[in-house]
Image (cartoon, rainbow, N blue to C red; front, side, top):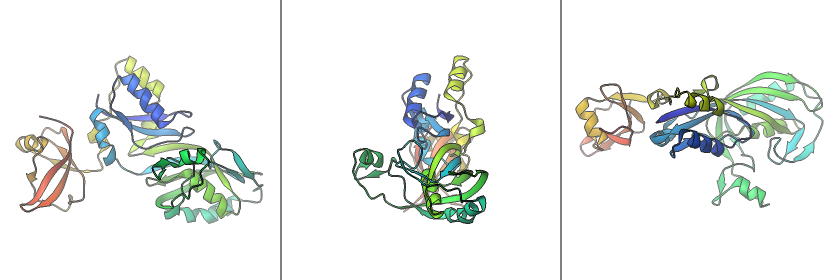
Length: 299
């Protein structure tokens, strides 16, 4: 029972809650997740099982969301979970107004995360400091938003817009909602959020906790193999003798190619096609070597 689970998180659960539930259902201790979702958010939450928890760092970083943003409302948390700070009619806004500023939020942009977030400052989570009433300057960061598409528009006193957002890791959709409002000379808040893609996992292929429990009761659940999840990494195939040495922690003499560099993680397979782990080409006095970074299978 080692590999990955593409979990469709329900609203009201923290990512930690989901990990705990999976631990109990599978009766195993080593379970981890690949990317926190707020309790009110739903959608794809990659779950690693067993030794696959050591592979979380090698997953793809791209993510995609569907979000609803309400304009004219400001809260303490930049979503509807917080207290309302300001309401200001935004009935004058049109869809054309929205589209005219959306381009500001694509590409590499500066973003200030919400004060209620899991980012650590001075050794504490921002939400812990905020709940304690401490005023903290939230550090600005650079994030990348690949594309924002308008899905629907509902005008009114507090108009709402549905958008599809594809972005890199570390992007806060709540911050986009807040900053979109500011760009339109009003305020904005995130109403709902669903993650449709994360680390190569798609929402259409995900399982809810209830579906997982049913599959387990029927003996039909099979984890997703690491080889499938790590398909974005360059593959290296070793002979049986090479595989045995590599899995024992030995570095192998290696002829570097244009597809594997000293900075790339490589997906190592044996001659039978089995996934062996993650390797890396390193320089040494004896030339290039293929070094183990994480050995998944033992001989």
